[in-house]
Length: 223
Image (cartoon, rainbow, N blue to C red; front, side):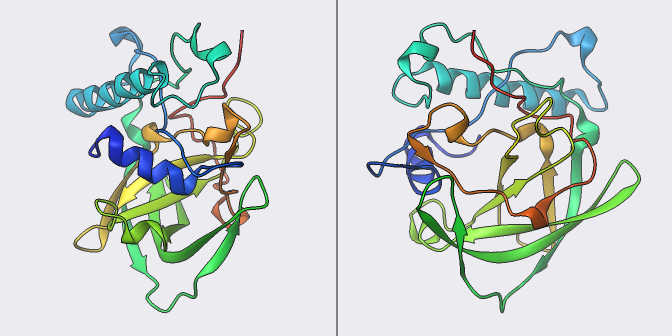
């Protein structure tokens, strides 16, 4: 992951705001897959996914960065992930929406998050074409280190079964041109999945993918 832990804390403090106070931690996670189980199109890309998973697990284990309550964190061994699958890493076309009007995105609490539709990403996945809105938080863009941060929340047909019913999130960066890589292997759960003290943006229904995204973090289940 590109950003340091301290910067991630700023990011999630804005996106996953505590209900009773401003403050938050980091994001996502998954467990190592056996090499014999991995669908390999490119070993380097798979290694990047595994590294992402390893770092995410470390964040969830660290009491300073974990969203997990102590009662869950003390027995935490790793989040459940789909096997790395590079077919869910796509090159999308970014259609910028320069005239988009800012709006207040609802969250899981009464808090509203001021966002703007930065653009629409168009891509093909397993032979079908899709599009999703990507958002820019108006407060976050003025935070040092996050001027280029884009937020991509999405829903898909695994929700409520293999994955969290409310959808998942992806972090992106504004590209120099009109092409942007979207790797669904990096999809992670909102922090409110792990701890009800967090307030998380609700995924717009516009961002429903009518397919199964069997990549990234699965549902969180406690022992």
